[in-house]
Length: 219
Image 1 (cartoon, rainbow, N blue to C red):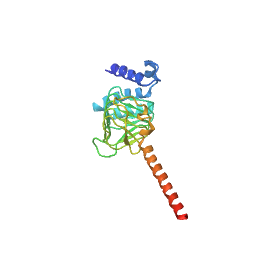
Image 2: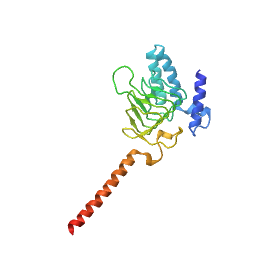
Image 3: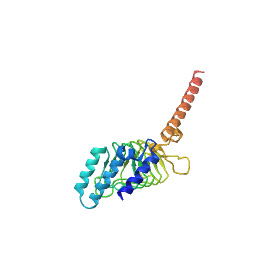
Image 4: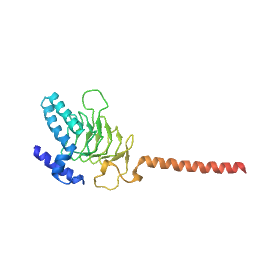
C-alpha cells in the first residue's frame, strides 16, 4: 500500500511539475511528498488511538518540511503540495483525489467548537499560493482557487474564484485543465479589474459632464 502510494504520487508530480526531472529527484527533494508521507504515519497513529504520538510525528514533519498537517486530516490519493513551505491543514479538513495546492495555503477553522470546522476539498481542485479557505465549507470538483484568495463560502464544482473575499469568474473552455496557481491568466476574467474599469468609465463620463456644464456657465 505504501509503495503504491509513493509510486502514483511520484508519477503525479512528474506529470504536473515540469521541474521534476526524475522519480528519484521527486523522492529525495520534494518536501510536499515528504510531508504527505509523514502524515500517513501520523494519521495511522491518530486513527488507532495514539493521538499524542500522532501529534508528535506530525510536529516532526512540520519541523522537517515546513508543512503543518494535523494527524486527523483526511488526504486523498495523488495529493500534491508544490513548494510546501507554510501550508497549514486543520484537523477536520478533508481533501479528495488529485488535488494540487501551493505554498502558504491555509485550510483553517473559524470555530472553537468541536466537530467539523475545516474545509472539504473535492477531487481535482487546484488551490493557488497564499489562498486561505476558512470554515466548514465545501469546494466542488474541478474548482480553481486563485492565488491569495480568501474563501469563506462554499464553491460549486467547475468554478474559478479569485479575490478577497473570493468571487467567481468566468471560465473559458468546458474541459477541466491544469491552471497553475489556480489563477486564470486572462485579465478580462478578473472581477476586480472589471469593477475598476467600470469606475474609470463612470469617472470619465462625470468629468465630461462637469466640463460641459462649466462651459455652459461661462457662456
